[in-house]
Amino acid sequence: MDRLKAKIRDIPDFPKPGVIFKDITPLVLAPASLRLAVLELTKPFKDGNITAVAGMEARGFIFGSLVAWELNVGFIPLRKPGKLPYNVHSVAYSLEYGETSLEAHIDAVSPGDRILLVDDVLATGGTAQASCKLIEKLGGEVVACAFVIELTSLQGRDKLVGHSIHSLIEY
Image (cartoon, rainbow, N blue to C red; front, side, top):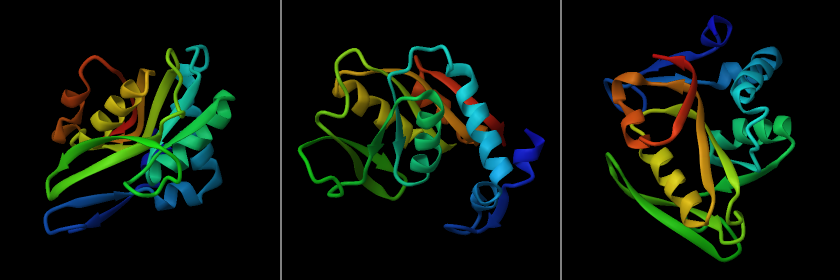
């Protein structure tokens, strides 16, 4: 994973002073690194009977859709409010600076579907936790959560108790 780690850029004081943002842009710009990340995210789930991959807006779309392609399954976009044109289910959750929610079409998941949740970063775990709740509200089973980066000091794992977690890089 050192090859991937070398492609992640630190941006100090973004989005606010004291935060070091882990920028994946150089990783997704490098075809070999992007391919390696997708293959490594996919590897544990090749035989996991995954029926779809879900990813959160926006960077979860990048990795999630490519993982879905590798697994030969569909992709479920989990969107910010007001972005989907059809009937939706929604789950609200708290951020450090307020409240927001995620939405998915009501027919995006069928009862019994086995979903792999994919995102770029596991930080505090709020978005991932809300995503799991939304998938379960739609009748699906979250088989596992996969992340390119996990910021372990923020203890996001604690919000995903009961879910298998696969992270490629830990900081």
